[in-house]
Image 1 (cartoon, rainbow, N blue to C red):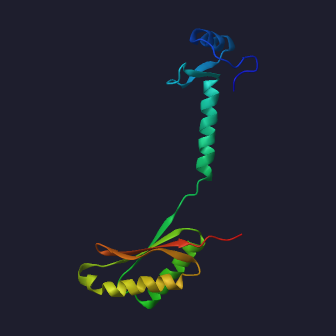
Image 2 (spheres, helix red, strand yellow):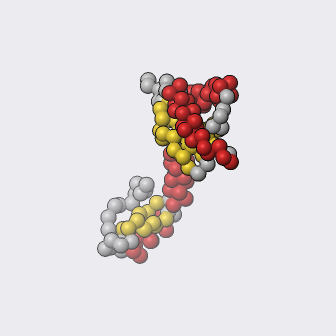
Image 3 (cartoon, rainbow, N blue to C red):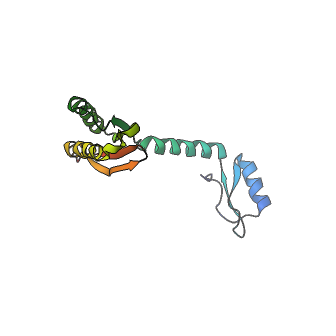
Amino acid sequence: MVGDNVEVGIYPLAEAMAKSDELGLDLVEISPKADPPVCKIIDYKKFLYEQKKREKAMKAKASKVVVKEIRFGPNTDDHDYEFKKKHAEKFLKDGAKLKAYVFFKGRSIVYKDQGEILLLRLASELEEFGKVEQMPRLEGKRMTMFIAPKTKSK
């Protein structure tokens, strides 16, 4: 980033400022605590532009995790269960994480074991599409389980 006609070396602050003015560039302090302070002559606007460009590229490469939810009741019927299981398969095939939960309304909290059996059944039937990240756990009136999609091996 230092111009071609600038010699790299140690300059007094006044001389460094004069050189940067002469070249029409900015004098940027790199390490102020060093003795003497370390500065660099660069085009600061160009530097900021390139930094933003790099950050944008890094952000674009970062994978975004999508979490899809499927809600069951403790006494979910077989047809409803199959319907929701098909949706769960689709979500896992698309690469989204799955949060399956059983919501206990009112006194239905008595059927905790039925809710756990339902979630474990779902986990075993979706085994080829994803792996269980968190086993069923009761949190208040919800029993939650997370399933992560299986990574495709190339």
